[in-house]
Length: 352
Image (cartoon, rainbow, N blue to C red; front, side, top):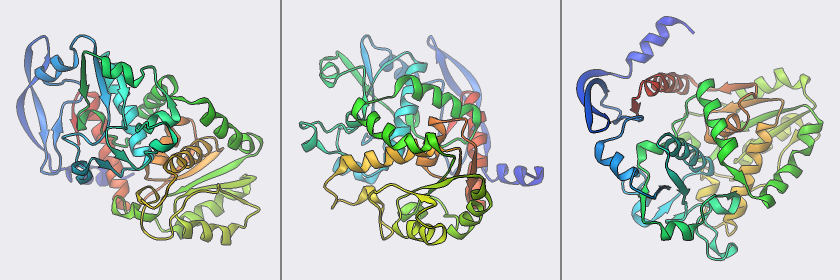
């Protein structure tokens, strides 16, 4: 990438420098340069405020990882609802665990403090916490209720900023491998789907459609098909993970049902995200389908990915996965910025 282009887009951050006191522990403050921008709120990732630190480190305190909190940016929080996608919340959990481990906190993942897109209490004896449908936790909710103290996560502590940097992805992968455990029944379902991926050389493709254009400028499907065409001769099959019915039909027409593998799943035929469809009565199944697609994508021999949380999580599950990232100029600039933010994060500065 040309140096001139990189410098140009780094300066697009419109950064100014001010000197501000930062808490570094034991009641001490030092003055460090903070980078302010009209586009970003600035938070210290590695150093929290004195009051926050005292709150976190109370005796027998439990750190609660959840959405629908006071400083959440979602407008649905006032209705006690969250319509974020499965892997946006999954990555928040991973980032929350990362934060808890840094401060040596006992944590509990609670996506049951309101109504989430995957809440299905009727199927799980009234349990609203959809995380418990798919994953085991070391703590039970009754233990959280009995705890003397608990502290909700803050937005900047667990915000799932996608950083496309190998070192960072490997760090998240280590956390996921050690601390996120699939339930046995979910694991068995996924393992069954993975059999063909262990037997054949498969090119994985993820194309996020529906409402994703509101978050990220989409890459034309025709451009993705050209990349698949160039690579397909090296593989036995093509696996497609998509939430968009029209994208599935486009690839089926192009490559045929013999070459293309896909799972029977809920897909949208319009620009409305599948997870925001309130008509669906099987919320658990929506999450299971997303989780299965992601694990299968992670087990492909190579992948063609887009800027999405599912694509990113596939790399977290398998950081050694060779991949081609399909992106527009705007999304590439955003990725360059996040890599800059990662560098600042390593210095102890977090910009959201």
